[in-house]
Amino acid sequence: MKKLITIIILSITLISCDAITGVELGRLPINEVSTGKDHKILKEFTVDLKKGDEIGIWSDMDMQYEGDVTLTFKMTMFKNENRIATMDIDPTDKYVTIGEVQKTIFGKTDWSFMGKNTKLTIDEDATYTFKGILVASQNPTLQLHKAEVVFKR
Image 1 (cartoon, rainbow, N blue to C red):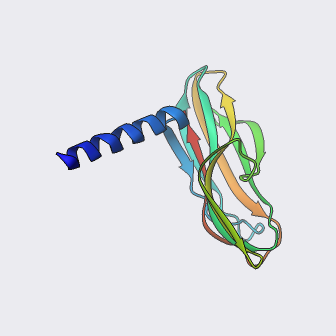
Image 2 (cartoon, one colour):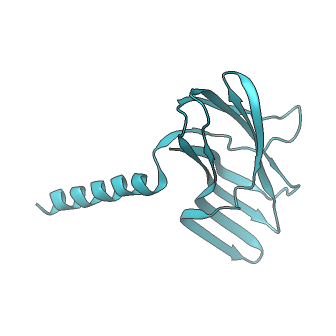
Image 3 (tube, rainbow, N blue to C red):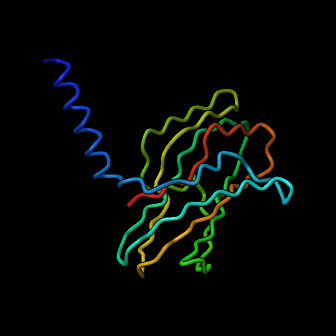
């Protein structure tokens, strides 16, 4: 009986989390910094969306570094294969955060989080494709364990 109650509570928690953050549509599992034409890590995600859909763009990050680092997801958005927008998203610039853990000891930072960076409202029924790379300021100590763009409705 105790296990059943635990399962029910966990189920309710997971369902309510989706209600707050949205249902995941897909992600760009970039997970590596692009350093130039010879080392470009481009990922893409395609989805059919309807007029009025509100899409949250989130960053799912886990990294270590010393000193300072600046990260930017550079994304291009296509509607029915026609480029319609470009976006630069700083994953650390977020207005909703889930599960953030950040510690800095003797200048070495360990930081993980999922954060909502922005949202889009879809203006027309169509097939949308999002393509993206991750760029970073020069910092040889940067270690990425996860760097993904998450799309939620």
